[in-house]
Length: 247
Image (cartoon, rainbow, N blue to C red; front, side, top):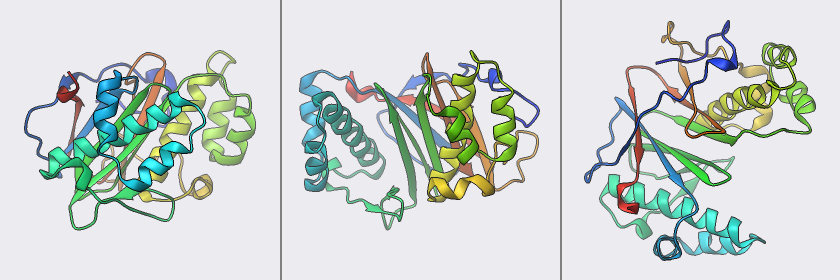
């Protein structure tokens, strides 16, 4: 399993994850991290089915989006989350009740299930495990006008130095390499972005030193996308799943 060590560059990211259709029965445990992937542009009939699982609050939130495409992406992302979690918990998707942390991280009380989600453009990812905190971040690779300013403001000195050393054509991917790792970690600990400048840089964990509290795995979930999952502790394996119930 390749991950970034401090002496490695962002170019080490590769499409090495093997996606498989989800089994009919889902079981979560502490020794496994399940990464789910789905396209957010689904046929209308599937969107309508997922919309029926949303809570009143989620339906109100969806109405606040100005563009129909954004409204649909939100509906699908939340509906899929509910459906996937419902399968793990063996309860109807519309009966799941979320609570939220200080920075908006969702959770389900009275269950060992831990999860996080991230979506960008037409893609959504979910990370799910038991009894260990985790966070995931996904980004569509694109030029960022304020990348230099953001790097100076939010990256650690080591991260910023590495980013500034990149050539112009490398910087979009390099920026999101650092960004997804930072965001995934901060989502895992339930902190806001402002907490990340001094407390974290990309060397928080390496494959050769799994004694660290946090382990980060960067991967390419689809062409032109970059993602990172941050997981607490060690002794777990990753499985990459696609929802078979969407077929």
